[in-house]
Figure (cartoon, helix red, strand yellow):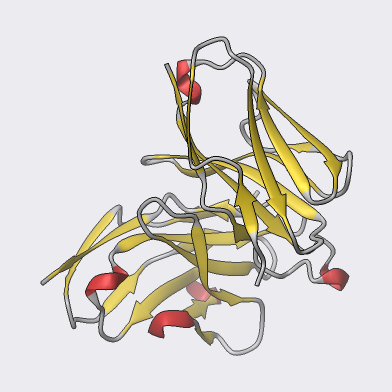
Length: 113
Length: 118
């Protein structure tokens, strides 16, 4: 069965600084990978997705993520964060069946002024 | 844009009550899902449905049931609510699980229902 690990429960970054959120997955075949963001009191919004092809994928709000098969990682990055980026971020992997995504436990991003 | 509507943002019920959470989508998606979200535990899949009247257990189905009588509506039922079911509940849809029909496409989420069982 697939699994996702987000090693960082909380991350604090200064506004304007760069950001990297880590995600490691476990899945036997080529996975479908996703990053979602959840603002307080809201549902989840898709930031970006990886299926195949180019290992660097661009998403909304200036985010990007890089798939590294050798490291089983799919880290999320942003060159310069804004206060509005403060939220919960979830990495997810989809396997080959009809069931839903397997989510990591999330990383809570705090932006310092 | 896909719209996933959950009938209530906040709900307060009493222990032992039968509770219905409703989810409606407007994009003719085949797959629908119910998750619960708890601090430190992330999202956990309760049930999902890949077609009308079809349902499959997820990772934590105990204490829950579901109903999908129409394609656009997926209901989560707490047969006899207990305090440990206090949580945020999220509904999601996906066009299909079949890759040939877009099964690699992402899921779309509603805004969630925060349920409190007293």
